[in-house]
Image 1 (cartoon, rainbow, N blue to C red):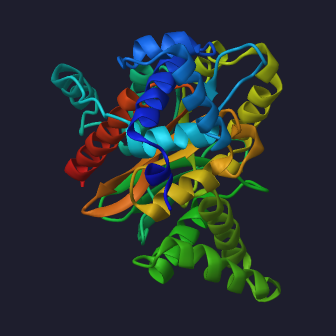
Image 2: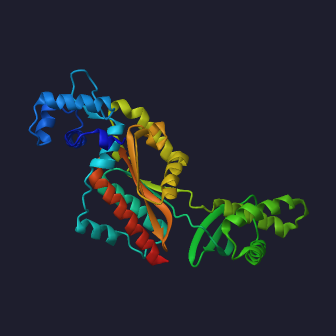
Length: 347
């Protein structure tokens, strides 16, 4: 039997009022306040009895014996799944987001703008995963010498996306050596999936390193430095971490520190974003549902964005469980849609 079947309509109404009041004020809610907020003709004693039933179901709890009640993580989950009324975004706000997500920006610029905008409108920390494509095709690579053992790499991937990066080499290469490496890699690997180049080519070349001439050794190092620096879309941009400071109680500073460390090391946050990517739908993780202790006092809302009809990434927000879900959810969803549309326009 589901919780909806167990909990009476009156109890659901009181739970919704309790969660709404607690999200607004951040203080335990008394039975008298609940009776007034819910708009029901109930005595405080009746409300206390209903609250006792909800406490037995682990949907609310009392932080102190004489205090009012606050929602538990299960309470938030029931609220989000069964009681929440989603607000529509203001059309002017949607147009402002759409205008800022200018398709003429490059991919990185669009992702950074999306992350900043999402943080600004939600007042929470935001994360945007770099696009993951099923195939990243190498079209062309070129190496140009710079000073101090540095080489400028110009990569053309997929249809027309150009990426420039600087790599640091073990020794100085002459323009002729770099041109030979360019010619070899383009002739051997243009048109191939970049991950196949990384995973197979470099392994094969390194296995036969002893038999290589000087030109081949140059090609090995160029390929190693270039393709190992090329992201597989396994990264993200983040904005608004400082918003978490204003929403964190002093007792949770250690947890906040752990979350900031996770932003720096990225692995755990990426794993969470991966879950949203696989689900290919809006996801809400409340507290420990994420599987990470550092997020036990936080909620994560993610939504996928698509290019060419294919989901290639997700974006989302991280904030306290006591967030305005009815407003935040449509903001995350709309930003994902607008980002996908802007990227689609570019391609």
